[in-house]
Length: 494
Image (cartoon, rainbow, N blue to C red; front, side, top):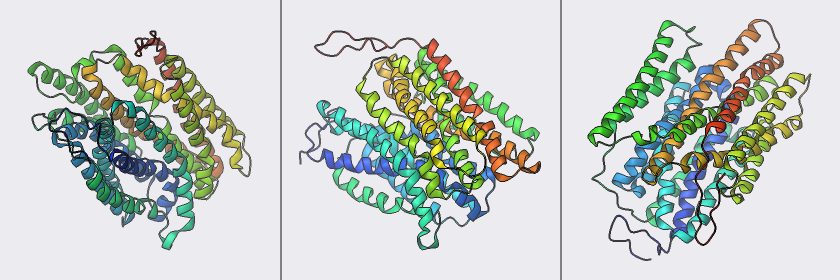
């Protein structure tokens, strides 16, 4: 094996075991992504088994997303400070330990705390993954290496719902939903052992600092925003719920003022002020927040509709959502071949297709009478999945195209954090709409199928409005700059 380079800036182009290291970080990424997709299928079983309330179930999903979102930027920075390998192994260890806690949780409160820790572990691990790959591969191999991340994400989205249904249906050892968390343990332990051996030590930069003030302010703001949205219904929207929402708005303003102060004094910034002054980035950030707030809550309420409303087994519930994952996988592969061409058009077309898919699904739910055949959802879910696969990479590329090179890392990290924050916010909002409608329907004497159908139809109106807003955002985004490839004529990205 070629020895490690003598300084912080030299890459590892001749690291002989780079593909072994790549397999390990892909293993850890797959574990994290699989956990995200597999949990939704288990929620109805988990809720019944633990006697959990609707807000408890929301926290199982939103809590993970929230801590994951809040940790991405600061822990990404820590990877630069103390070393990417060390932070990656710490993240995998934390995620694995939290998975054990989830699988052995004696009650729903313990499970929610474990999910918060699990999300934090994912936030420590995830920012290091691309950074390690960027470092150990020479430039001519990076395209191949990075394409494997897309393949891993696609496989996790396809396998997760079906595997979750199989595991719960098998009721391994009478453990019901618990093995979906415990299965992470051998994967995590293996990743720790092999990662320590095969991933090279990448020196950090102890002279770099983190923006602790910014971390505290934005974390408090997100908590004050999400908590009342999830718990407000249980407390009949008491005055303190609105007080917390108002305090969240104030803290977001304080965060902007804090970052400006950090910029003036030359101190570390969690979100560089230059990015906040970049009109295209800020418009794109808002679009991303709305865009990514729609799908995570949809699969939460759709699983409840299928299993609690129609009584489908978890396996059939997972198979029902499979066309969406297949659509994402296929469209992502096709979209990658288009490179930088027609970026804004692809965003608009993809989001429009998602609108059509969810609108058609809503119409089908409203027209169903009696028994349900999962095949009726194949076409709309496939269309929505294709739309997501077409639009998602173009959205990121278009937003980041106008970001200066010096801010590229911060911009990419910020967008990932915004993506996750959007998911947490969407779970809170859509779940509030869904469960409020469900409570009203059941109180009025509606049968479970009718109650869940009406509630789903009401809640997905949020998705439809969100997609319209994103399409309107595309109209005000600037065209990405020209992409100049070596030895080729200039090509317009849009």
